[in-house]
Image (cartoon, rainbow over all chains, first blue to last red; front, side):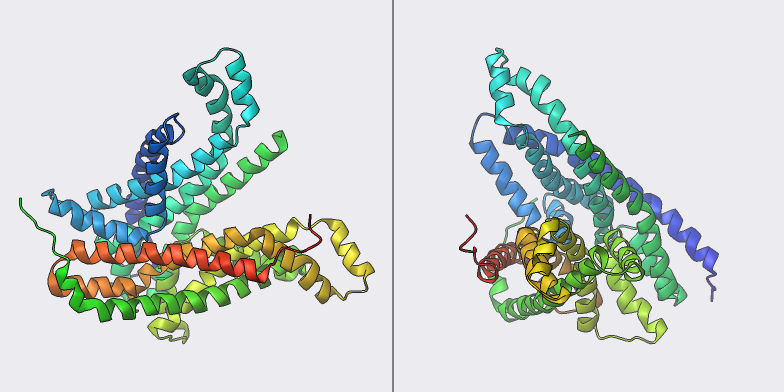
Length: 216
Length: 224
């Protein structure tokens, strides 16, 4: 029987973390793009796209991410797509992140005072010009700290993909724990690696927020 | 490809789903109550308590907030027996939820406490209130009132996050879905139904908590 030393466990876990990182990046980038599309639908002049976006947000924020992963895994299969855990994990995490990001960003756009809209309208700006020159540049500044803060949730969310069989940090942890009979060490290390990934993001978000508050 | 959805078979599984819902509700009821209590204690320690207590509490809060709930659950259920602490699956799940919610609630409540105007402490003292009385009536209750919507959201998030406790064989709503799909091979339908139930639970829990907030913190007559 193979014996697992501390170093074996640590190197295996670190090696598996690259999938956690990669999945986090894919989910965050994909979710961000989708959220951007949804945002423009939500803050447009027409009413009903905004309502649909709100329904989307309500559904994805009101149900467990684990269920969304299961539905992506089994649902995409029904469509005749050969689903790998990677594909299902990406799809579910992108849809889930978008629901949170669009809500954060919508709040930032709403935070731009009415007076600014009126002032820019008085200057003869159309809707696109108002967005481009007045609203979005300011909303973007507001949006950075909570967006960085949400990236922590994305990294932690990837842990659930281990349940549909995607081999990332958590899955590597359960496999190693079963093989080495050292669950305390293994899960302790897994937790520390997640902490090392998330804590800098949390601190960064807090710093950015403080900087923004000072500027006002 | 031809796949026809069939939800009819689920009817025979309703007792499993009902038991799962009951377990999910039990977990969030106990976990929510104890988690908020822990959050209040930690928020006090970090904002008004002595430094020797504040620092370890800050470490606890950061450790929990920056690691996944699933890992916390596995650490408690699989890891702690190495230290001689062997918990049943429901106890482990409840403990994990309390510890998890406690950390988030601590930060939320602390924000409420730190928004208390300085003059109110002095006003409490000038009314000859003891420190404990001042904390309870002047600091804590208004702080909780301020942050109640955020706290309610966090409790809902923890309830939805509890879906993973099925991984340590707790027989919650997700477990019911897993059970039903493994017997019927109709995974999509089983998970779709449980997802809808979760959505209903989330909406109902949030409404109940906001209602409760209205009962605990009635609008004071003098506040105009």
